[in-house]
Length: 308
Image 1 (cartoon, rainbow, N blue to C red):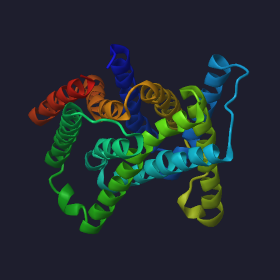
Image 2 (cartoon, rainbow, N blue to C red):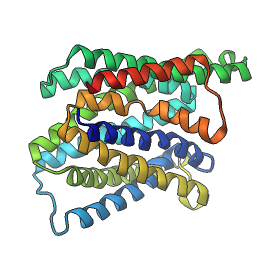
Image 3 (cartoon, helix red, strand yellow):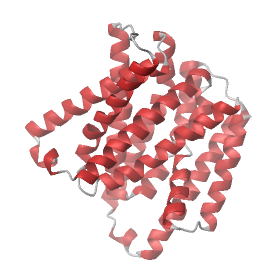
Image 4 (tube, helix red, strand yellow):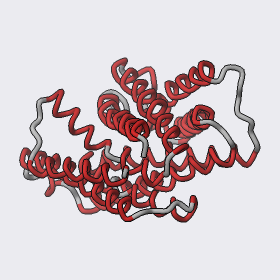
């Protein structure tokens, strides 16, 4: 793998690592059903600006089949997958939700073999497994701190709620795992550049997110919060999340998979939980446990393996 490709993967991972922190800030004064609509605004605005700057006067050629493919891809990943993940965090907490969701690189690797015909070496398999183990150790180290601070937390978590949260996180992992290879399929079949692809994804995202909100507002008004009641701080956090994670992180991921195997890019970008922990350590002066340090070692080892 070229050095620039490895670095872009890490930058994309960093963008996604910031996303949970911004969502957590946004959820303080907003509900989970407000996250996608608000984030869709900055996502679309950023990708529209990218189109006007990098491809002025050029717009992607559309066919009904490719348009359907984009909407289906966005609906199953960025909308359904994200919502499942947000709800799983609300039910079982971020640490456990991230642990279950972190298995998605294995799904991506399997789908890459079946759909893209990518040749997966032993190093890629080993590196993917090492990264997943590392993420699990990092997140389990965080959950251990929570458990020590609140020893009754596990007891208070009902079995039904626990199973529901795990199922939601697993569903999110499946959506994410299947999504990544099909982004490359869409770019290959359409001939679109990463900018064109993610601009169309942003269009699909804003249409789907606001259509869902319109249905929720009309049929289930008790589960949505009027946007005028969302505090400015939450608005800013969620808008920043849409720009950083969906626009910038997504576009960088698209550039990477356009020139590199998806089975290589995905495990490296999946190291975002590690970066989240490192950010928390830097800003909040949190010390890493031995388990978390071991997790960092496994993620670094796995990243080196898949990049060879």
